[in-house]
Image (cartoon, rainbow, N blue to C red; front, side):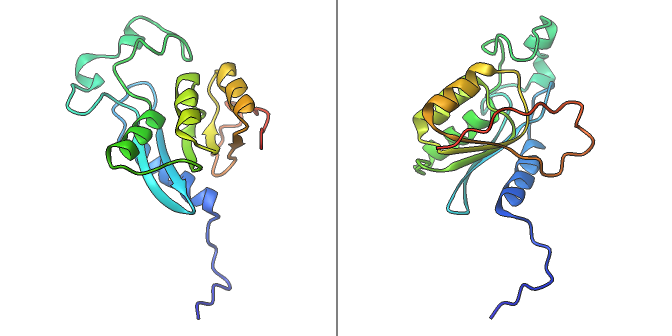
Length: 171
């Protein structure tokens, strides 16, 4: 019998959000490091981080197209060599034949509208993120799809000036 009295164990959301931060350390993006994990029934199915596709030169060597052209955050996402963390996590699951239908995705950042459309079609039912991203279309798509959308306030270290609270949607 396992007696957990007195142990300060993280909640599942805290646990998986902490993992996204470790995954983000693998990012090759020069602008921001983002990590994502896909989870079903408290089991980690897939992970992804933002950066250039496998086998291609990283932005650290080529330079950042978006920074070089002064493209603001949240605009012209097609002008980037990299995949987003959420895209990478979905692709990794597909490569290994892992179903992510009805799963939860945890991401360090709110998914953009392009990632949101992919997550909707992949059957993701819950999105948990820590940092907001300026994409109102993504929020509208999530609401219309009936996906539970959770802003995690876990371990936010002095970032309240950056924090914007979106509406929380649920099924």
